[in-house]
Amino acid sequence: MDGEMEGVEKAGNKEAKEVEDMEEAESMEEIEEAERYEDYAVVLIAHGSKLPYNREVLKELREMMERRGLFKTVRMAFMQLNKPSIDEVIRELASEGMKNIVALPVFLANGAHTTEDIPNILRAVRKELAESGRKDVRIIYGEPIGADERIVDILIDRIKDAIG
Image (cartoon, rainbow, N blue to C red):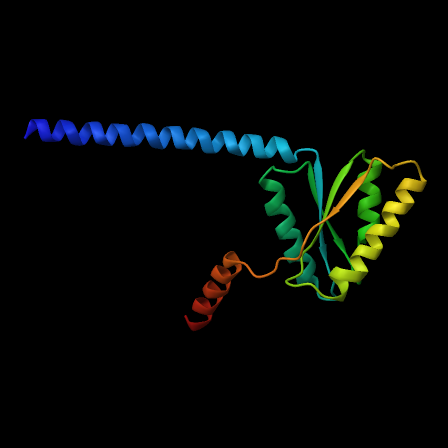
């Protein structure tokens, strides 16, 4: 009986060591990932609305993303109806010395705003920056949220909440 318990303890200790190694590896990956993105600014882009809740949701998303500490800074910008505008935020980041700016539309799917309007604004501000001597500023345009299993999880949670 004691021999059996010894075997269980050893297996348990071995598993504990593997978990510690795994946690250490995960934290190293997190550090490497954070270092990889520390020179990037992110601009979360929303449509804009007359209703204040829209702005508050984007602000909360910005704060949540910022707390993760992956990027140098996370800002928010709006296509219309709210301030700051996309071009204002990009210019501000460039004036602060940012060279890598990711413009991310916080839209569910592609549409006229994400395929035409926002890219046109980004092209215009990139041209303006280049003409003012800031050819070193890279503006990277991300994709909308799109279909994703993580979104399905949220939708299922909302359905469960609605049912009670």
